[in-house]
Structure formats: C-alpha cells, structure tokens
Length: 383
Image (tube, rainbow, N blue to C red; front, side, top):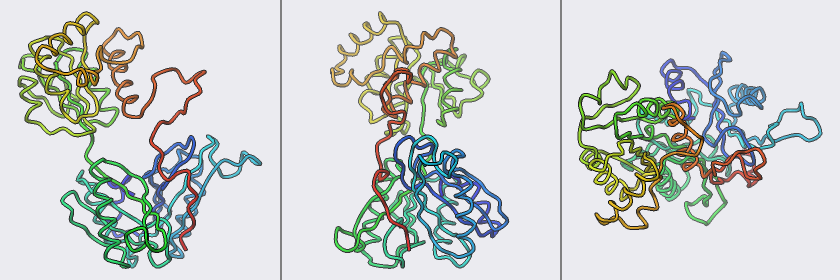
C-alpha cells in the first residue's frame, strides 16, 4: 500500500473508496518485491502494479470484487505448466497477494489514511496488517512511527499490538518490508498469525565527494536509482548548482568535516571522487568507521596502494580497509564519465543486492539475490 502512497493519499482526500492489492511474499523469479501494490477505486481506475503485467488483470478483478463484498482475500499466483496462457507468472515465480477493501466503513480506513498521508509526505512509517489468521482480525491494521507511537490495532489481545509494534519498529529501522509470524496472543502461544509489515522511509542518501566532471554523471545515475544525492567539495568555484543541477544538495565544505556532522545510515552510499590525499585520507578514515552501506574511492591502482598506506599510517585497521571499494566501480572497461558512473552505480546495486557482477549469460546463479521472505511458505486464505 505504501508503495503507491502519494496517489492513494489523493484518493483518500477525495473520499474515494478503493481496494488495494499488496504483494505479501514472493518465490523464485517474481518481478515485484513484497510491498508492491495495485489499487482500484469504485470507478474502475487503477494505479500501481503487482507483477509488471503478468497477473494484473486477475488482480484487478479481485480488487473490484473486494469492493463489492467487503471481503479481504489472499491469493497465490504462479506459472501454469499446462497452459502458458493461463493466469500466471511466465517468469516462473510465485507471488502471494493480499487484497483489502478500504471503504468509508471499513476498520482499516483511518489507519490506512494516516499511513499513506505520512508516506506521501516522505515521513518514515510502518504499516502492519494481518495476512492470515482468525477471520475477526482480517482487514485490521497498525501504524507504527519512528518515535514508537502507534495508531490503530488488531483489537484482539493488547500483547499482540505491543509485539507487532516492536517488530514493525525493527523493520522500520532497517527500511525493510516483509512478513513475520507470531502467535495470536503476541507470542508463540495461540493460533499462528502471518503479519505483513510495510516500511516507508525517506530515500537513501548518496554523498558524492569531489565536484569533478565524473561527479555530474554519477549524480544523474544516483537520482535514477532513487537516491537523495549530495555533492560536497571544499572548492566553491567547482561546487555550484549550475554544474550539478540534478543534485538535491550542494555543500561547500571540507569533506571530512561535512561527513562528521551530517546524518548517514545503513543505506547510505559514500562515493569519494577527489583522489587527493589531503581530502581522501581524513575523509576515508571517518567513512570506514561509519555504519554505511557502501564506501568507494576513485583512483588508479597506484593511487589506491598509496592511499591504503596513508590510511594505515593514520590508524585505519585492515578490517576497516576491507570495506573500501577501490578502485571504485565494476570492471566495465569504462572510459567516459557516463560509463564510469554506470560502473559505480552497478557496483552499488550489486553490493546492496548481493550480486556477483558477472554476466547472467552462462551463469548458474539466481537473477534476484534479495534475502528470502516468507515467499516459499504456503500461507492460507484469510476467511
């Protein structure tokens, strides 16, 4: 649902009733990940996608039916060997989709409205919904904010709300969307429940240090990947908005001083393109000790060896050095700024998703490397 929060927020503001289908779990080579959503209103207007086209028609009909009868439905779609033209995923994957009506009288309405409003404003929020379990819990939801405050609930056992809130808070901290399994009383006791937790978090940060021509291309690549991109350089003549119009932020400051005062997290990518020891050494000494996703530094192999030696001299450990991606990027034979930016962006994606960087042709490896969710487990229908 939060995958299409901006559009749904407008529908809520307009008083529209709608049904929303959300990918709960995936198995194999499914095209969309948990949290992907498609919504249909009473006029038949549809927004979003759950499969990139494979089962959109069938899911559309499920949403239309849910609007009529008010029933929450859990449906599984997979590839049909008997009839390749039957409703299914021709990529060979399996997806479980939860369809929930969101009408004026439905208990999920106020919680859903608050969740999509927060996500639409770019605020961090987690929405927890029951996927499978007792019929009386179907359609209920719990909104959890970063400060621990909550809205809504499941109306069964207070301990259930507390447990789900704590688990959803952990999902939110990590920026994850997925399922968890707990007992209906909030522990391992009672009938098992499957809960979908959707996290909506601000875009991850990419900080590009060094306002050079390669940085301009990398800024564009970072924006294409959905990052909030900052360019930082101590030289005001180079760090200008006219040179980097696509950047979200331009900072004129010594790189290590800026990095020391700005906020980073486990999704942040730091790209050091300065290849100048007076900038690189203090910057990388700090960067390699921060809990960020990626630290890469540009330079030749000779520059890399010299930089490593300088970093060791200032106390950087071998374990910390092992985190450094240098020379930055994958081996694409890149020469131009645009090709180099593609090389760096590809390494960031591979590092984030667990990819090897080798050609898929001839490789007997999974196409998607995301950590498994509840995708492989059979989950029953919501009554």
